[in-house]
Length: 384
Image 1 (cartoon, helix red, strand yellow):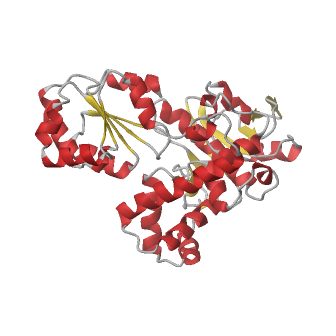
Image 2: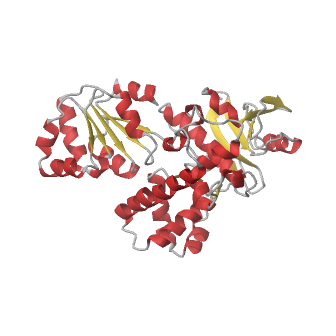
Image 3: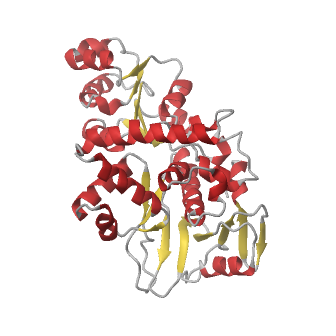
């Protein structure tokens, strides 16, 4: 994302970068804008200064600064509006925040037209230099948070990290946003969402299993989505004359966190686990999201499913037409997998590129009109 941030910094006086906690926002902002002062608004001394004397606090940063966790001080956005209107120097202020709702609410209310917005998800495969591309299940189990790719992390240490992450970030952020009284109920809700990654969202079933109302379930889903812990993939919006499934599909942002919440504590267990397929699909969807978001583009990713059984796990618009993608975790390309790739494009009644089959095997080739693409292809850091 560094080139994207540099491009935005040449155009806008303020940059805002959102994303889940521990995805690397602070590290990236401090690396790209190393010449700017850094201020964490989670520091109680800095936050207290800002709240008690806003003018005195901001007077220290007339030439710009990196403000981390900007949503902690909502008044910051209105103060910055006056400062950047007086001096429109591009790339002056950089804001980061792990609660997209809080940051974007301030941006839209006070900084509209003055801010370039980006979202940083955990590492893409091409950014993980230590990845063992021969062991798909290990990669899915570990996930993509930067801290987990430090040298020498054992499975026990990875599990410890996720335990701490859920306790200190997920539950704490929820307390601040929702004032949840029963954290055990919320924890069960999050685990139920993890177990549903890669499936159609059924809010009624989810709420019933969690023992909460449908309204509460939707509210909690919204918070998890705005914290970038999960995303909802919408069905393709064009009507091809068939009855469409209108519910979105639920995907966790990180397969490692989803696997931990499901209870998979060892990478070898994932190789034969029933959730291996949904987790692989989750990983592929997020690799496409990361590729687009890192370039500063809207995700614009969808899926297709109708009541006649036609479906495509992923579809998106290209200059050549609608690209259809089937995702299968199998490590051997069988005729059945190829036929699944062919079926993925049957609903398209206009010129379109060859359908893709993204799979868990190492081979890349075209077979019977289907472009078979290995999961390892993502590591080449080039567009598919």
